[in-house]
Each structure stands twice: as C-alpha cells, then as structure tokens.
Amino acid sequence: MPALRLDTSLEMLLERLSAVNAPAALATIVATAGSTYRKAGARMLIEADGQLTGLLSGGCLEQDLREHALAVLATGAARIVEYDMRGEDDLVFGIGAGCEGAMRIVVEAAAPGSAPLAALRAAGATLAAGRAAALAVVHAGPGAELGTSSWPAAAGSAPPRELAESCAAVLATESSQHLRWGRDSSAREAWIQYLAPSPHVLVCGAGPDAEPLVAQLRALRFAVTVADHRPAYGDARRFPGATVSLGTAAALATRLDLGRYFAAVVMSHHLQSDAAYLEALATSPIGHVGLLGPRPRRERLMAQIGPAARALAPRLRGPVGLDIGAVTPEGIALAITAELHALAAGRPGGPSAHPATPA
Image (cartoon, rainbow, N blue to C red; front, top):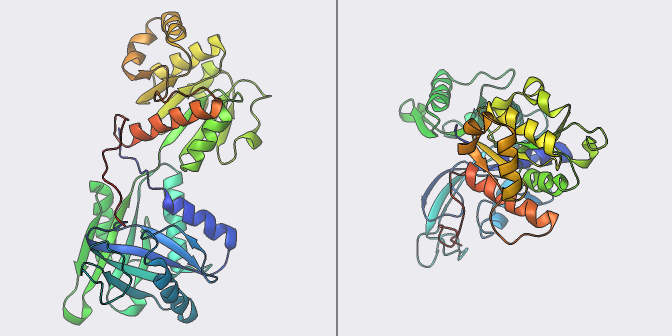
C-alpha cells in the first residue's frame, strides 16, 4: 500500500483561509531538537485577532507566537523564531513549558494573493487529486527569500534550481529532508516536506447509518466517496464534504477509479447489492474491504460470489470495525473509523503504544 498521510492539518488550514479570506500569519516548524509537542512540518495559522487554527505546542508557545505574528502582519516580512526550553529553569524565554526541547519556526504572511498561500493551495490541489506534493520552507538566507513554496510549483512561481531539484528528489524518495546550498553570505537552508495523499475511503451504501460514518471520516479529513443505487439515498446534502456516486453496484468499477481508494466499506443492507459490491471490489487493488453485518451474513455473501471470494478473502474484514462494544449507529461508525485509521497508520489496532504526549 502506498504511503498515506494522517496529519491533514494542511487541509484544515486551507479550509480556514478560504473561510476568512483575510491576511493571516502562517507559522511552520522547520527543525526541532529534543522532546517537542510537534515536529518539523507542523503548521499553525494565526489571524489578526489572535484566533488560532492548529497548534505547534501544547499551548505554551502560542501566546508568544501571536506577538510575532502581529509583527509579521504589520510589516509583511517573514521572520525566524527560535525556542530552546531544554534548560531546567527556561531562563531565556520564561515560558516554563518543561518540554525539554527546542524548535525553529518560520512565521510569514499568508495574505490573499501571496506566494505562501498560493503554495499551500497548489499543494492542496495536488493532494486532492490523489498525488503526492512537496512543500519547501526556506529558513536561512536573505529575508526576501524566506518562506514557503510548493512542488509542483504554484502558477507563476519559479523556485531556485537547487530547491526544485531537491523537491523532485523528495517526491521520488517519499522522504522529507533538509537542504543547504550556497556558501558564506549566500548560504540558504530549507526544510522540504514530503506530503502523501490523505486516505480515500469508498463507502458502498448510503443508508442512514452511513451518515455518522462519513461524518467521522470527514472530521479526520479523509477523502470519502459514497456509492449507492438508490436516488432517495444519494442526496449529497446528507454527506457534507464527500462525493456521492449514483449507479448500480454492478457498475461500480466502470464509474469509479477503484485504484484511488485504500479501503472500502460495504454497508448497503441489501444482500444482492452487497454481493455485487464485493464482486467488484474483489478484482480491485483496494487493500482493505470491510463488510458490515454478522459473520453468518458474511459467509452467505462469500458463498454467493463464488470464485471472487478467493481473491477477496485475504482483504476482507467482516464484521468491520474494532470491538468496542458499539451498539448505536454512531458507536458502530466510531468502531469502523478507528479500524480504518489504524489500517492507514499501519497499526493492528488496540491499546496505544505511544507514551504520554510531552507538555
């Protein structure tokens, strides 16, 4: 399965920038050392009234970053902000965060029509099309060159050759990297972030219990397509932010590019339709296929689809969803969403293996 990106904060920032359509400051972590709440590539939006979208720390640095953001918005000039909280008494900043880490942050203006906003939107459009993108943040060099650019480049943008070549290499290796080019007073440094597409889920069945599932997947900013053969259920207004595809289950593979999805959930509650969905998915490259319903129903469907069951069996998860004791549509949606999140992260699901998040 190709790499997937679970941190969809870029999409969250773009949604907010489109909603406010006003100048805001974009703060991006470009380097860290020690224990920090977020790592390089994390972004936060700071509006002129101080409203925040996203976090770079557990709340201990945001007030200070607001002051820097206001200065950037007033002058239009990007600036570098550094925090080092590895000292026991945090004498330099007096924040008392106790994070035992350091970070370097670029704060720049993301006003309508600006290069940083164009770069974010170009990357967002590439990702929405199911392709990987790279965002480069120059954090050392002449002040006019500090800030964010994208690859593929935004319209009208021409990043330096060294930066363009490194962005192409990042996409080829699917790995973020630091870049330094030039010497002495002409030296530049950049953090180039590899951004994989976010998970795309196909929900086969648009019944009432699909609504909380799609809502929870969209809350994670997963891309979602809902397929159904019943016009009464195929009302896009029931699934904000998702794509709705109307048509027969048997024609699923002819009207949708099944290679775009990392997982599918079959839940039409109609036996013949579920069988047709499973047959279509059996010949698809989708790596995970979930089936709603009890095990006896799964066995009946697998027997019904005949030879296709052999190709589908290694990828079929039925009943779909983690066992959390769910009984309501919302609880079942939570169980399915949690399982899909674990699969996208390459995890089996179960108790968290992560230590407590540092302050």
